Image 1 (cartoon, rainbow, N blue to C red):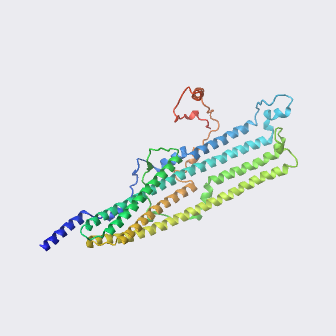
Image 2: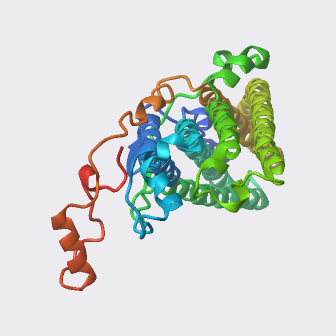
Image 3: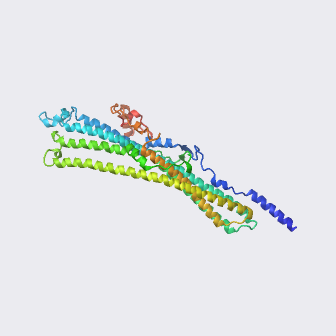
Length: 456
């Protein structure tokens, strides 16, 4: 009778063990499928980079600065042409009206015109730099959001695995094979992991908000995120040589080109100071006299300051390149180390699970220690892969190459003589009616292109 009882117990125990299984592969399942969307709505890298180009505050402000620089050319050109000014109240005030009628005879006016053109060219390069930076910033947030989304999945996988283990331990606890303290130890681990998972989801929300702000599209109800992308494996990562890249980076840098234009403009500014005393309406500081030499030295110091800025910018670009290439090397090393660690931990975890299935004995502290280490290893693999992607994106930004950067120059308007873009008569009436309270319009009113104040 006793033997029959033991046999029945073993059969029941075996059936419980078969129903309560531990799938260790759940810890190593693929965390994302390329082009899969894990959010309410998703966007690609190109989508978000194009949005940053068109909608970010910095991009729009840089466009306006370029518009202002272009319009300033027309202002300086007007100083060469006859013009009318109400301050000319007496035909005998010769020195007052000569500049308005024959401004082209004064050299300083020509130098100011050339200076304004160079300032506009410098602003074009500044525009390219700003747009490239906005694209790079949006790509960085995209990769960060993708990285933390996968980290959240890694934590979730470990919680799922731990719950499988907990179910089997609870089943075997009924037969006295497992200490209740071990179950509570695992419960505490699951609780901590659940807290980490909640914090990870909160971090994702924060990055989403940063992304929405960058592209000026903050929406309280929108849960938008990146399409899943394939992260590189260890064998696919390639180290880069900073020495080979330095010359192309400096050649492509719009910041250096902008400073070069400003340096040329400063030379014309110096010439303006030299000849400004000939212009009747020039200020007292421009008068030919004791202060002239000092005035010219000030102009020379501005040129020297631009040279200092050029050297500093070149040094910053060199430093950035070295940081990026060193980061790539570090990412490759970390990724290789993490893969090696994960292989060892997977072997240990498999052995611990097999031993538990056979003997019903478990060293819960060792189990949880290995599980924690496995979590860290997967984080390291994921984070180093994304760090590599971010570094490669930064290299593309410095070189201004690739489809996302090579077309930026085409965004610069070519024409400087388009028709004026002031609001039409109908729109001025609408604006007045709104101000007087006679008419209400939607807050999200969008003006058409020909109604905008800044056009070229």
